[in-house]
Length: 330
Image 1 (tube, one colour):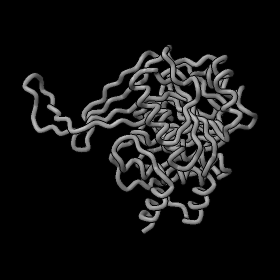
Image 2: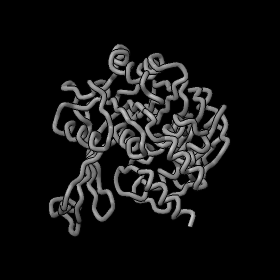
Image 3: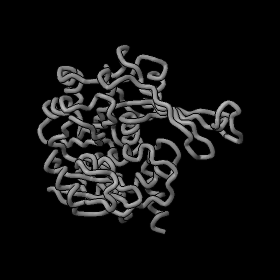
Image 4: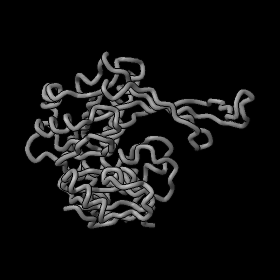
């Protein structure tokens, strides 16, 4: 569903300069591009002739880049190692207009790096370099010292949880306690045992994540929306729930029930990497500007429709969205 031009333009104008603090698992995405025309004599695997490689932001860092690309003011806090990959990541996000909060770069941490091998627009494999989640924990006193001033300055907060250790039950509670009353706090969750995502303004899981949050099997067949929304309300009590459904668009819910389905506007899907980052960035920017959740979700749906047509983690600018929406209406 593409919004009317006047509604879309009003949102694009309203979000400019909105201050969003992104807290979560920052990482560097490395893409190795090449071609594969033969099988290795050493093992039944393709031989990739590398043409070039690129680096971009991943995880919470990609969320922050999406905010900046849309015209918001993005501040990022996520542990970044004082290492070559970390320096490259800081350069990428700063070049994209993101402010990295003081203290995020630490010699005590190793930068998370995801390397993807891509041939002929298809991903062959992914290699991850990361330490265990205990290395990335954020203690409540660190939140008070490092994040309290940034929380007071922000119009909204995004918690970008990739399950790497920074977003925990304890850190969520400490952030909520340090934030001004009524602060809009959005969460993109990574469900796992023992974590309590309680009392947030909105949660934006994808279909599989929503089923796990609701303690339902992934192979349930048709998505049981009523049961999912009711169970997530009873467990986590979010004010709103937005479930991204891939080719089926989005489901919006409140008070434990689905209230609106938004059809997808994606015309081509080459890569869903980072699509959830774009959704939560656009949705939170619009909510911070006072846009209704329904219109904010439709705006986010359009932004995500654009980025999934790109290979690799990507961002959308206001002009990208204007052009994409106009083409979709034609």
